[in-house]
Length: 299
Image (cartoon, rainbow, N blue to C red; front, top):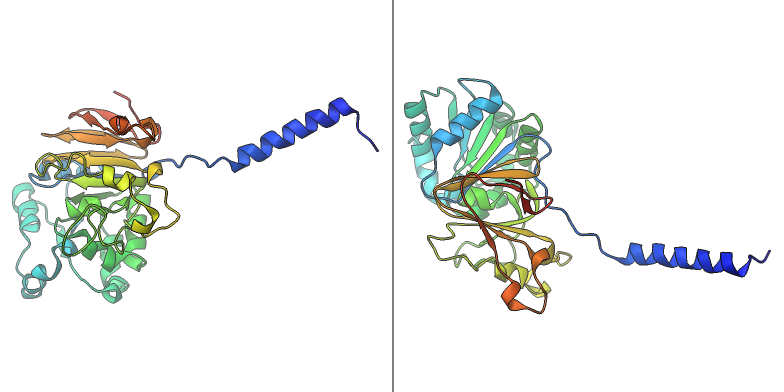
């Protein structure tokens, strides 16, 4: 049966529009965890009081269960842990805040991270804090293990995952400075996968103190040959650079800035591809709230 020419033309246009729409790549959203809270700190001058207050509030307990993960310290922590030498943050939390249930977790072995003796300690925790050091040790030990699943369960039941410096960088989807030696922003191409607690994101830390204000731009300019994930488009990422003694507290898709420094937002969607002068960032002061999904200040 032949359709009237006007109807045929209309159907052709509609089909063409649908195909065109399907061909256009969807912009990937930057989102935080559906439940739980992230405390992401830029390193140096960690405010343990702010951390403890957050954990007590989210858990509803005066004596919450806290695990301090020191894996980022690498082999330099091995002897002290084996000998039972207390890690400084563990001692400080117990002494300054009279916390009784603070223990250290340390291993460089995926096999140990897959053992119930290890990951069940996270299943019984209200919060974990990941120390500074080298983030490669964290992802090498945890990615693809039962412990990583336990960290996801911690968020699902409303817990807190905290990290400072290396412990902060590991929480993004694209992990910067992922190598054991030179610590370049793009790393060694083997350690660019982070924990993705904030999806479609890339973090940097110690920004102002180490003159790293423009370092994240290298991620957005990266060629496919420089990327571990060949399907990744760096321009889909939201860049978040955090000064020392500064943190963002992430709940769902929003965060609040606290501390002495600033948080620097790199949003490629505001940049003009052929205009290098447009490739810049926005700095947020303490007290500012930001929506990562909408990519805009909300206060």
